[in-house]
Image 1 (tube, rainbow, N blue to C red):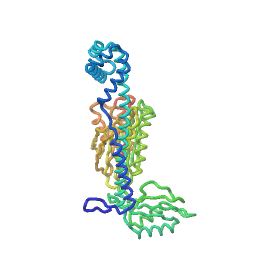
Image 2: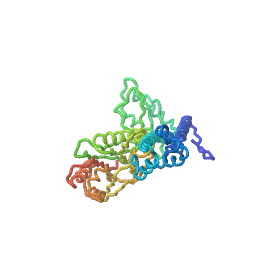
Image 3: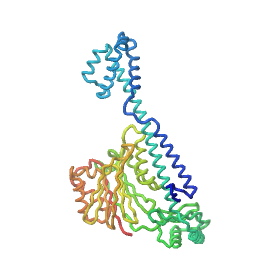
Image 4: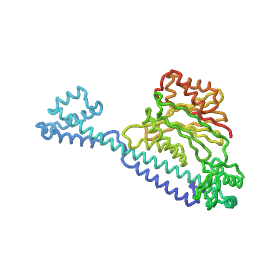
Length: 468
């Protein structure tokens, strides 16, 4: 990929050019959605007039006062109608006493007039609500399309920039693996934006051959003169079908998580869910989600969020894009609000930097020796608003540091106004060096604070970072 003097990006790969076209087409479709009818906050003058005419047809047509009200007193009748509608919009079905009195003094069919006006108004309001839902759904689709277009375009450019040519190493790998009984279809070498070396190897075992994935990794490491590891978990041996294996520079750090949880009222069913997954580029993510309420319904909501998040992240979606797409999916097409929090930390296993991503989540704590850092968030959960703003923080961690994530049920079990301080004290006072033991110790200390059964689902997730 080359950048011209005009600032335009000139792609050399036909695949990148085609993906650029796909991205532009998605953006055009997004703009088309946004150009359609926008959500309405109020009725237009024409719609109000149509409502009055509908009421007139139902009530006034056969009234002996019709000619007078809609003739010489037409202005006053229209004014009265506007006032009634304004009162209905403000007070609902029960108008204030003054408005009722004015209507009864003016209209001989006041009771029927009010009933029909209420029916017509509520029908129009219901229709506007459905039209607005369609408009909000279009906005959600447009946002998803823009997000997807940005993602595939960025990934395409990054991939094109990352690929390097090394025919000599590719030939050596192919020859060495052939001796072991493996047939290589493709070998691609990349250096990522962060400087990580990666090898994509598509191969299969030849007939009557048993080739271990460990041996394949040894060969690739020797040829490239690097200490490589498999990016994701692989099987013990290579199968008869072609598969793509990804080797990457070995990390400097590894993480060990531990979790402790309990349901509301000591129930075995908790509305909190947990996820841990490997990400491309030598990263690892852990997350917890707290569904709305407690028990089985909350568990279903938080499980859906965690499953989707894991699926998107493992596919290579950027974190913010993945969360925004989940949020839009939860918001669109629902009669009621069903929200869930997302509290996620992504660890860079090469640098030790951790990135915290929070959507409606509780506080996070980082324990370094006896000192504790408290990190909080003010963002909303997913599933509330169409456009979601997430809080993102970064911290440098060292070997032996612990990151502690909790759901709001843990903090709510402590005295109001002192939750964070008390939890910091509990965390700093623990001498546990095992993540699982520390998580259980923290939960036991919180439960013992007031000695009562939990009023909400409670989850403590502890992650220790260690040098390889």
